[in-house]
Length: 177
Length: 201
Image (cartoon, rainbow over all chains, first blue to last red):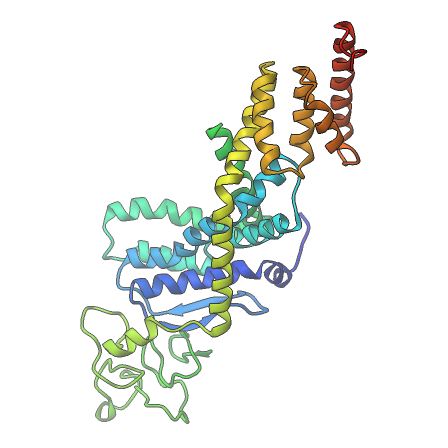
């Protein structure tokens, strides 16, 4: 497994970082959670962050934590799909197609919540006011999020981004044909 | 970002008191301070949990941070910086553009997949029809055009095969695909010759 500095990956995929942080902030606004500080992009680790007050409920914590997972995945998939179809299926593509694929992969690969997000969700799931059913449903979800967050070391985020942006359209077409 | 000396909570620079526990972040700060009620002398303690932004009474409702309603509204609907709005709008425009291209791309993708399946089932007429849809949508794509040429050779579509092969001239393609097209053309020529149609043209 070869090593590429995190800052370089962040620069190359900066649109995904910005969309990720905007998604966090969007869900904070949705749940009326005070945002104390925001950094949409910087040359550092983490490349972006949203600091907000602790939400009142575990549901809100989970929503703010996994909001980027939903938004980045959907936006990345929809941007890349019309470009990925000719490139993957017909083995052809214009420079515009490759630009859209880069943008889609960049956004989709930043879908996974960070380890910080995972930690916040974990604490929310195990708080006292959460019922046992929510704990049973939430715990495996948090484990998956942790695996995704830690898996960036072995390029899991890039693999996910490429799968969402390029393989998903092909699978949908195979199913539709 | 200022770290709270008491609880280590990361606070934004403009705050004079920690959002989480109320501890003073900067003794020389010009903003109103809500000192830590635990650490201050008893007779100097402020009302517990005043809004660290403006000092107003906190909003009821079980919020973990003692923010007043107005400050919570302001902070939760914090506006995006101009460059972020421009970036978001740009992504939005690209998303709309992608949405507009999506149906045509899916139709072409489905047609190509159906064409390949029809070819596997030796149903070259159906495959030709499907590949024609793809070529109409993506005229610069070599692979669908080459597959269309192969199918036209198999169905002996003499009216169109010449035009399709002309469009393929000078295009780069894999050796495997080139060999397949070449074999199909030779097969069509042999068949036309056998029927005595080649000499008549």
